[in-house]
Length: 555
Ligand code: ACM
Ligand code: ZN
Image (tube, rainbow, N blue to C red):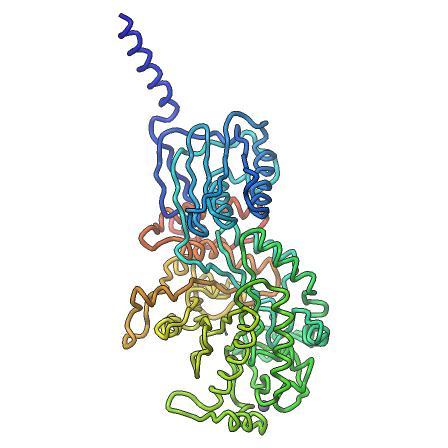
């Protein structure tokens, strides 16, 4: 009799404890999707949750978790209840990886440092109602999270986004808003393209004219640069540069989200901003004008004048003091050799260095390698490494340099085969200044080709276009540090438009950067975009609606 009673009691208890959710709740389609999710039965009610953050965490992680805790408390609109979200440092977890275990009463988050905690929090937020991205209380939203175990880590260590603030400027607030979205997408590098032919936008104390003169252009081209000769007659750029104070503010803001800021000082080409400010930097001595048109300029830094190397070093010295990043990007792209070919100083330098044409490159290419190598050396003495665009392959690669491929994958692969690191930023898939519809007439002016979300999402950094060179070996693949998408600004004058070009393509970028190809699933990602759209709406971001519009047309 007693035994029967106990048995009945056990049965009742067992049925009762499982009954709220007999089947595991489906896991939400978050972006980027975690590498490994194991669902279990039951739910965790986040509206009853209190965040527990132990004292031993580093200060950045504590601040980050505490702001998540504040947001959760204010948005869920209930007082803390019986459930706990506990954060724990676990040194055995790899850098940037994290694990989350969700049981009915407790969520345990483990990571070894700030980045892992950032990504864990972002995963938890995406599992919650979109209201968590706003500030208004939403006590009636569905705060139940499915019980599960998540083990997640990124595919690539370098997950970058570039904004070109030289062609058109972004205010500090606009840059921060962009960083907020990078954070949500678990990205960790902000490549800040600060100088170009159309404007110099970073304060350098030793050379004040770089910003007071070099940031301003007389006018700007109207329409497409291969077609138009018309200018708007409106001066652009007055006051549009960052003080060193503002640079530090952005660097710190990014760091609080686990994002490293890599500045780019583009040299020795793309320097008309600097040449307009200090004409002696050029081969002809000018006068020069900050460009109002797009494309590239024959006027570049004179590589024959020793004092120009001092100039670059002085600029980079200040840059090093502002950016804690191990990497400094020194450009190196699209530098015509026209002036160098006829400049007596450049030719004298070529002779002095004993540079000669060979069957692959000209002496002037090797002169550019000389500039890049000297800067790499200068930065190495300050504990920094350089990144340069793929043109660095024309000539000799500076020791320890990382190549950023932009025209084709094969240039990144070539670097990897030479034992150098590479970052893939292949324009056909990752330049977000391209059209989002084939119906170009009804789109704002954009750069040439068509790049829908699907195509970004399908990007494969290992595809080789070079049959002769063949695919990368597993060992060579380790040199591909990661992937970056670039928002070049020739046709993107303001932030509203920048957001239109960036979102939701950034979602696809994030998934390519984070998720292993075998774990990708288009249908799941597509549903994830619906979730993300709510986030964009709630946080007040502009975005392109082509993904949704085109499906409506098919219905
Ligand atoms: C580039 O697009 N010139 C890097
Ligand atoms: Zn010269």
